[in-house]
Image (cartoon, rainbow, N blue to C red; front, side, top):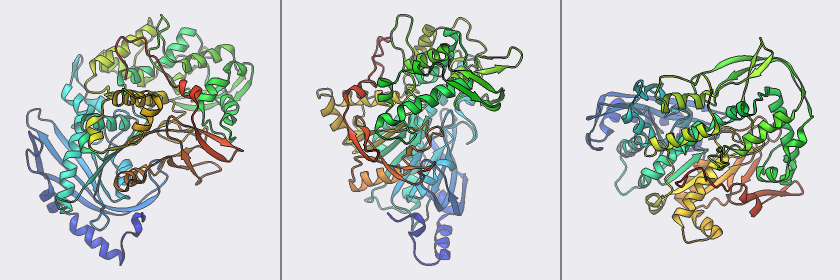
Length: 582
């Protein structure tokens, strides 16, 4: 595949004229679908904007390679007659000579439903018209949590369903028709349709695969925030561990525990490169208690207090110089966090992060008056519980008084039940997507400190056992792997590289991989990845498809091996629930 910048021959002026000829408000307006293309929806042609963008340089992105692109930047709005919701959509369209009969839908992150200028270029550089939506929230700068409540105690349910799945679906339906009209595509010409997103964007991708599977040929889904009722409340678990054990470790002690774990577990995968590629072996072979008594020191610093992007609160706090040794209490907190949430009867309610992940949710705050570290409630969970469960216009909880592990489990059940048909996004039956011939690349950073890596493994298993109920483990994995492949990214953090493990790879060319799979049947036995920082920056590495796990021989040659004991560490029985937790 030729890079975008070399798709054309002749002078740049000739290309500019071609893009300029297409990128006009009149052509865009005439390319809009007819009213009632979606029943009850009308288009506002007076809202159309179109401007040509030339030589835009995109560099240092995790999700697509460096490229300089030209495109037509289009926006317009449409309205739902009954609800009165007005929705703004945006599309980046490559010039007609660069268009490759592809459409890419994109999503957002946290409570944002779109990440337009950060995501759409990843389609344009591969010849795809790329779309995004404001979800009907009022603007591209307005997030879901801003418009979720009509008032204290009153949910804006129309907006919930727009965020849950409807807005992305409509943006894709409209975008496909608009794209065909814009480029004068013949009815017989296939428009390959893809989705790409991570975190909330990953959840949005699954919302489409589960509820609009016949629209898409390929899904690229990263670290999805599915199982919403559990996932959002789970950010509070680390705080509850500290409260329950009555120990609030400073940032330096937690960092030391992570760093010592990295040193101990790095070579277990057969390669010493500063990356934990096998958190399963780390869990099986490393005893956190061995760190007790290890000295640590951190200079005074300033850090951000924020719940991983899902909360509104972002405060800067000062940490003093810290000098001490890792305590038994600190290790107990770390171990309990890694164990995951269990109720008072010892039943599992949810899972936690892989051993070696950072303790972002466990961040404490320093009280300069008492000279001690204290509880700092993660706003990512606090806002979810206060706003979405208690229906109050708040950004966090003010206290965890009388809150227990059982309380947290009950909050998880409440969130799951209330939003089962909108935000939970765990339907494991994907027959319409499968029968449409769709393909899925699903990836998740193995050291993700925000959405547990095991969350993706568990959903993959749910799809496997639902779609192939009469097959054994290996046979059903082989069958599922023909169209849905899961990859755990060694050392990677949440939808990003990991500064603690800079030599880890990241799958930067997923759009190219899936388009080759869909359009040319090039099967991705492994997932292509690049080391994007550190001493090996630029090196290529391949990522194994689950359930195979990477192992290096002589620190050089990687194989993807089957290790049942390792696989078993990712198997969970959620016995705190009466119904299956997919």
